Length: 275
Image 1 (cartoon, rainbow, N blue to C red):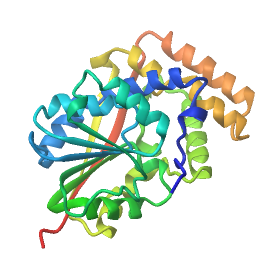
Image 2: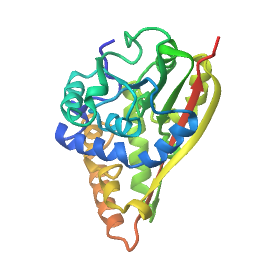
Image 3: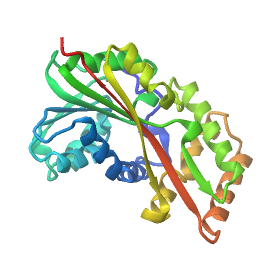
């Protein structure tokens, strides 16, 4: 498998550098809640961990800090991302990271070998999510767990004051994802994906981040990033007029007396049967 699904950093933004900045913000914006839920799902220091769709290493860095005694294997298909991660993690726990350039559906990792697999914001981009979950089940030890973190467009976030252009933008983004083989409404299917892939003891939780706690600045980088929608114009899914409307709405929103953003992601967990 050579396709990166509905995500390709070389096409996703104005420049790879700008997209890397967004991804770094995205990696930390809800991490406090994610880490707490991961521990609640059973993640412990010292476990052997696989991070699939690991990208440029920003979330891997968080895992290295959370798990100072764990060996982490990253699986990433895009060679540009692998190179970025190797460079970024060189002095940030990278000596405990094994880098794999491979597909999430064909990791080339051995059977029954890992305690925990973490898939963060990757399932929305892949055309065969059940096949990917089955591959995760294959590499996990009996009793090992897979946790998927992802979004659903219909519960993506709250913006106050509300703006019709934000709802339009999310819907257009969903259309673009579907056209490229992804699913921006994957969140509602995570339980079923795990179930169909043969996992048991399923669980589903929501994690949130909001601007009253973190300030509005991180949310201007993600998700209120106008550059994300430039690709939609090129794909013919958004007009220049709609893009300008979104840009104007963003400025009006940020200039309102007390702008508020709340992001919601879903975390699904399943265990490989012990037998």
